[in-house]
Length: 318
Image (cartoon, rainbow, N blue to C red; front, top):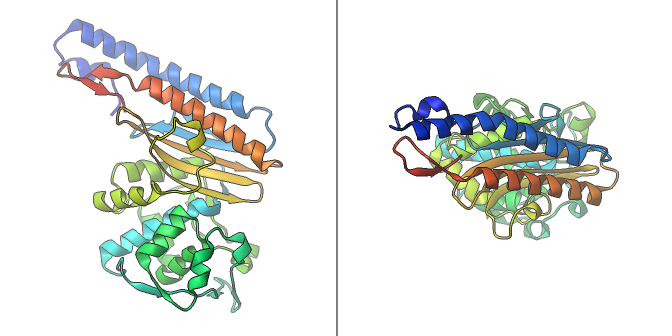
């Protein structure tokens, strides 16, 4: 909740009211300083970077190219997770439902079908289970935590592209375009693609962190899945060891993305989305993204010093 002088008018002391005024006045300057720091990190770097950074429940302090549509890569799997939990709530899907593993899918356009290239996937064990049944819960887990393309397409096939799009629209998730299955190149050739903006993913994570994606229980469950992420090369290296971070990465050639809820030691949270495109050297691009994460964490960790609430009790800024 934003601080303001008005919030402290009932706190019963001129000193507290003065402190509130100073804190509120300092916020724009701190936000501008953080945005400038991120801009300096990316200035002159090959490729393009989009960044959204905001305390939980607040407007972004950093919104660098945050309305530019960028290849979602595997961050789009968050919307499949979202649609699955919406189906759980609606009773059209059960967590323990069994799905038969296969690797042949119908394109969204035309009559042709396609298979995923296992060499381009990141979770081989699921391919070894072809012909066997796997629960929806397990497919969702490996889709997020191991970024399994096969699990993703099996879930999209079960849920349907149009219903997933309907969930995105119903939740008012602007800046997110769910287009198709992974590696549906016929659809891609017709311009049907998965695209996100940093602000769009930031808005999704803001809602998720506040229990507004499907519902509070579903939001908590999705965050729990995201906390088990096994690909941790973008945002986590900029954080102190052991910092909890619920996130989803994504990558294709020239693209490295990560979208996260980061949990500060004092219990406050912040949202950080880092997207990129046209990276000629992906390892160098990842180092830029690491530096952004480190800078944002440092700023929000400093900002999280306790402040007195209306009853004079210290609370962590959020």
